[in-house]
Image (tube, rainbow, N blue to C red):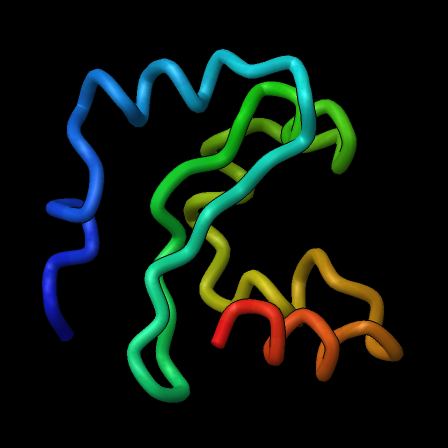
Length: 77
């Protein structure tokens, strides 16, 4: 898989992570995706630490309700 971390700079990632609004961004390649960043607001919304979220093996299965997963996958693509 391509290195999605090259899509944004470290400065941009740090700025996005500090946002109070719930925000996350993915880099999608076909059926695969990589989490680029999550904001502090997103962590608060889920009630999880950034590490808990970023270390998840399957973000959609772990943090998205089953009935919303198809919609989330479509949005990521």
